[in-house]
Image 1 (cartoon, rainbow, N blue to C red):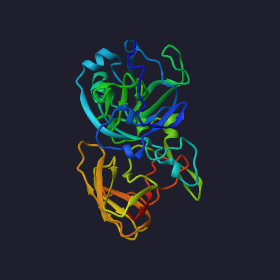
Image 2: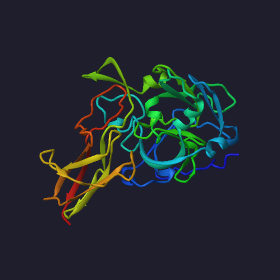
Image 3: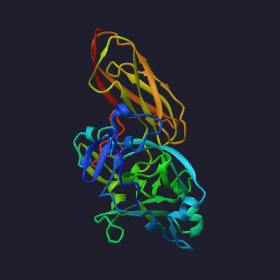
Image 4: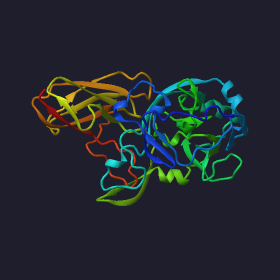
Length: 357
């Protein structure tokens, strides 16, 4: 029997309860790993009921050696630990204008955790890929029905082979030193560091190797259809790598602070390299000041930043932050509009009031 039937939601704020979607308050953001109750949850369906001894992973398709892997077999394979920030592709959607459909996330659909599991390439080696192999479609137990024994349309999305050969892409069975909680994909989920969270398939049960790019429901749903003046155009681009981004966690939006030295701080990250610079502005973008940025603790982990600010006078201020990564990507003032509200990495803006002590 699954002993993980009860789990805390911590300080998460619910955006949806059916299915469960919950985000982290910005004040709770930290680069350090947090318990599951401080990691965002994005479910597409109800949480499936899975007994660990019933779970198995099938590997089929363009392989010479089809596999059926049990949980006990998986955990005996060579494993690694990967600490990475994960962000929902729809994070910050609520600030998009014109408004777009979908879960109306604030800025807290993110989380950092230490995952332990088996590199996907180790499983693919056992399956003996054919030369024509191009992508792998990962499918989960979650769907319109929520029991293993019932047939259903499952959540499934493909990942290119090149990303799966990265040794940090793993089939995880542990989160922060414990079994993975139900809402995070117990007993096994895929972890694709540096990419948006929709590719890190929860409750993973199938790997189908294919010879050409997949065009299923979720590949289409998680694509950018760019628009101009609110009109979408018929050009699709798959959402994959995390865009460079920074967020302000302190002071909180709407705070009243004193006319004294203040530490402004937050998080930054990028899937295309480490963040090399974070800048902050307090005067409607007329001047930008370079913050102190920590070195990344691990590849694909977030980086803390901070800046000591002395407000010049009482009044209302808008604090903004923007990040630059090692490939020269700069967080835009306003991200390109797209009709799904995906990959929103606009400059973060926090209003505060400064009052005399």
